[in-house]
Amino acid sequence: MGDRMLTRLRISGFKNLLDIDIRLGPFTCIAGKNAVGKSNLFDAIRFLHLLTQHSIMEAVKLLRETKGRSPEPRSLFTSFGRYMAPEIRFVADLLINRDVEDDFGDQALAAISTLRYTLAFRLSNDSGTERLELAEESLVPIAQEAARKDLGFPAKAPFKDSIIKGRRSQSLISTTEGDEGSPLIRVHQEGHGGRMVAAPKSSRTVIGGLASSDFPTILAVHREMESWRTLLLEPSAMRSAALYSDQRFIDNRGANLPAAIERLRRREDRKDQVYASLANKLSELIEDVRELRIKDDERTETFTLEVSGRDGVFHPAGSLSDGTLRFLVLSTLAIDPDTKGIICLEEPENGIHPERIPVMVRLLRDIAVDSNFPVDADNPLRQVIINTHSPVVVTNIHPNDLIYFEEEQIVTEERETGKVASPRVPPGTWRATPNRESHELSIGQLRSYLSTASEPNQLWLSSFDKGAAS
Image 1 (cartoon, rainbow, N blue to C red):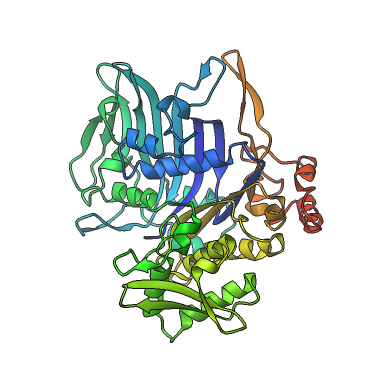
Image 2: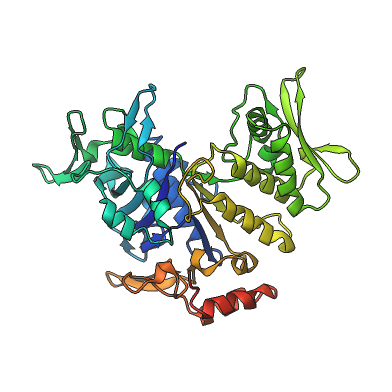
């Protein structure tokens, strides 16, 4: 995986996200009570990811199931009463790695690292079968000067210099109206002849279907969104031993943890460096932890994770709590140089004692890139996005890193009234600068939410009152 980042995401007409504009930094916490739209934001990110690997309708089916069933296309549109949004639209500002490789091993260089990708769908009904129909797709460069100015989150010049590169002024993908009024998608020349795609007839997006070194910038954007990870960690997967034949990378369920640790161990500079690093991180969560190792059983061709306490007795990972295993998976990702790009994680507080939540938040923040320094092997471009309904987590989040989804906002569209998501940002933070449209969060709105947390909320509110200076 290369260095990649999603800096801004505008969504309209998707589930209860009628019209939102989210700016993302290296570390972002999406907070709020249950059922206010936090998970729908993650679904939007996952949908864009799925479109790089599947047809449009397959991506719909692979979104999270509702009541045991895959979602119907209609259910993805914002709707209330007799109103349904006419389209679903995503606009994503991206930082991409320009050096890419296609599926055949051919190397390519993208023209520019800063791009804006737009994708829109309408609901179509062919012979009584509803499906999502591609209505618009575009990919345009963001000039270096504009990208540096509009990056948003606090970042020093060496960081910007290391990631904002390349030049191109012309669009790479654009949508025009065809002879019969149907949209036509034009793929513009990039060292290779262009193409025309009839949008309504296309079963895939251009980004999803044209991953070739002939179109290096399109390929780089494909690799960007293909790498986005939404971790849905499952206790059974995290506890399992790994077979020799398994992948040596942790998957989105947390499986292959022992194999991933073994891969890192075989690449280490000093003996037992990986074991010691992971044991030290784990000891911040559980004081009794002393050692960690991988048991390599050649007879069964398996790797098994084992941990010992003060008594020196090693126990298999199956004896660890769910929260401890989640922490260990994230600790392994943190020290893995091959872990780059976006990591989305829901409810990181699950299985963690409230007193240890600050340790978990600190780990997640440490996984993310430090924008004070250039991106390099010691500071990979990792972006972490979490969502939580826990006030205790929020008290450990700096206001600069917070987006709060309050109770749903009541809106009227075409004389129909309904509730939609209402993200808000703390005043004085980089997301709330005067020249940007944003709904600011008041301290009064937050007090009742934080009331169930313990003493640290007073420190958080004090910081909030001072404008959360960056």
